[in-house]
Length: 183
Image (cartoon, rainbow, N blue to C red; front, top):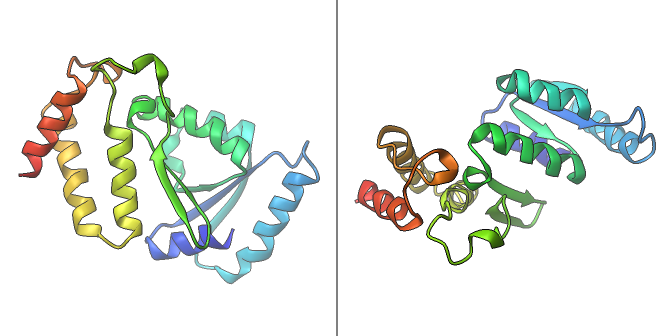
């Protein structure tokens, strides 16, 4: 909980949404909410809300822009991140990070995608956007911004997209276009 509040402060964010199911999961999620409520007074300048996970899923579909930073237990995070991945263009585009006070692990959200092994259709963007998050975490904001801008230029302006994003580009074509945008 404290990490989430600290993250919001460090990154100029504005609001923490604490997602739970304490109405049913009274002990586990009740303890989670209690921890959030205990830490909250240390960060009075940060907007704070508590939402039940079911309502959050509906809100993510109808008005995703109302959210800034979500704090939720792992199970709900797995489910809602998959839902959000669909909104963002599919799993191939979504980065993931798991953090604690000492370590951070950056990875693609989609896992191994065994059905794509040996094909030229793997979307590399989730790994690349995870690398962007890692660079920011390490304080390399300039490098992160350059890569993020190249990604935007290639898939947004240039329209070079893999099939999962409605395009026909191969993995190599995406990587080549990104390298060209960075040079």
